[in-house]
Length: 190
Image (cartoon, rainbow, N blue to C red; front, top):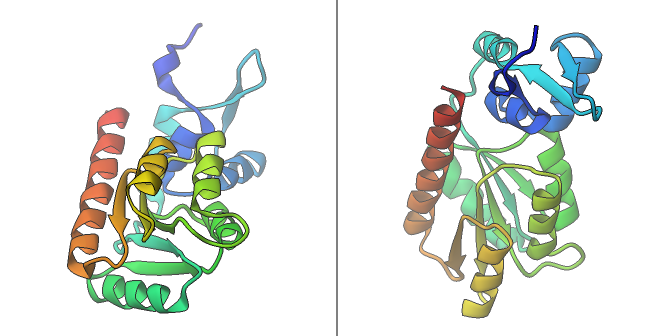
């Protein structure tokens, strides 16, 4: 009996509903925690109902996580203290590479991303997110002005904040981005 394509989710869609990484979804499929179906092309698909049922059994994280990727320790400190003070979990990464590692571990509710860093810069991180279909709101930060802001938005940043930033405004913008993504995820699953 054929199934409607809307009854099935991709790995990334399942990961978003479950609030885990795509790698975790693949691991759960491999160990039998989540049953997968394969398309004719070999792509993994998961029944929407199975994913939603698993999501209901998981312990909800009442404190959203913010991933701060910035090579400046003082900026990470300010952001960590400000976001923890208003009820967020904060994960820090001092480079683009470490930030990508953190994203693979557990997708955050939001990424605060510095653009200018040695090695993999913020642009490189955003290219990776786009290439691998990682759906997470990104708030890009830089002191380098409008051209950098335009490029960040082109590469998928959801918002941009110029450094030095107003911490209250940054927190308000961050909450708005998280709420918009949560609302979009809820709308797409109903």
